[in-house]
Length: 122
Ligand code: HEC
Image 1: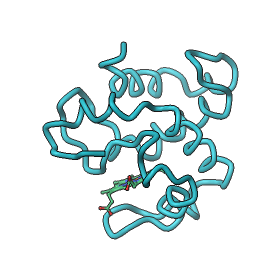
Image 2 (image 1 turned 60 degrees about the vertical axis):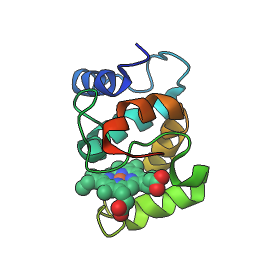
Image 3 (image 1 turned 45 degrees about the vertical axis):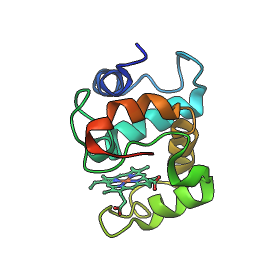
Image 4 (image 1 turned 30 degrees about the vertical axis):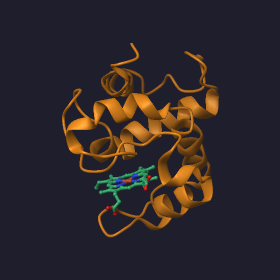
């Protein structure tokens, strides 16, 4: 379970378009569950590895991302970067808040292990 979180997220995202806010699995609250769903849909293509050890286009995201600063993370999501699209016209502020709440629930070391082959240290 612990080692397989990115793959699990993909499975959950594919299986559960209607599952948000109804059940609480793990320690995620309704907002975080919604954020996980939006994240898998909008960000997973670049930020979730299809399998362990696979490279992703963007860095893995977890509680340490964007220097652990929610406002920095929000700015990145809203405005994008050179290599990442902006989401300000695509996601509602509440969706972005939910994504941040979800990403902050992801422990840093789980994703780091999955991304070792890429040489990321985040
Ligand atoms: C097209 C691929 C792509 C998509 C889609 C994408 N990102 Fe990114 N993201 C990147 C890349 C690449 C970076 C690395 C920053 C850079 O090089 O500009 C990044 C960086 C980030 C960072 C900064 C990480 C850090 O610690 O510095 C955050 C936060 C982030 N993305 C969040 C998101 C969220 C949330 C979504 C969905 C709403 C998303 N991204 C969708 C490619 C993507």
